[in-house]
Image (cartoon, rainbow over all chains, first blue to last red; front, side, top):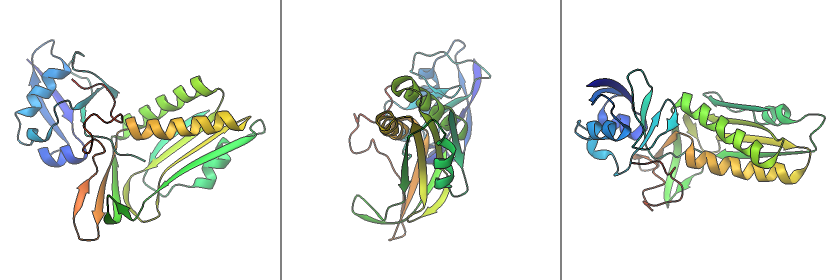
Length: 81
Length: 152
């Protein structure tokens, strides 16, 4: 397994009660594995069916691989402007 | 020329206009977003903005780069504010210039629309009745054209 820190913001940070959480995903895991690991944590019920995830500050679909040391963030619906 | 920033202090709109204006530009446009007193019928007293700052700066820079690719040699400065804002405070300002007006206007529209669709910034509205709520533009329409199509 690979441990990853996942950044949380805004409504997700409030739901999870933290600005970041540490999760474990299978080696050679993907963004989809990150989402699955987050869903089972307290607060994970707030995630929509298709949450947005950024890897190294770029939106990344579920098939993208994640590695230790990358900057992974789950992005609530954006509302800038 | 591109500059993007997430700022905590009030945005200096005239400063942004001056920044994009040069001897070679004949047209300068500016979009200014301000805090409004109502949202979906509820009286708003203020908005607290927050951002994933590092990615927001990167994403705004990508948008400005795309605007230059599409509309030519525009000069673009984007600043988005974070923190607690009150009514009429400037939340976002985008200044664009070009030799001619059409590319400046087109790039202006493109930049604000893409910013609202993609840049990781959030707003928590505070209402006159004391409640607060994170704004979710996708809540009303789950398949809203707004969301980046990168979900799983």
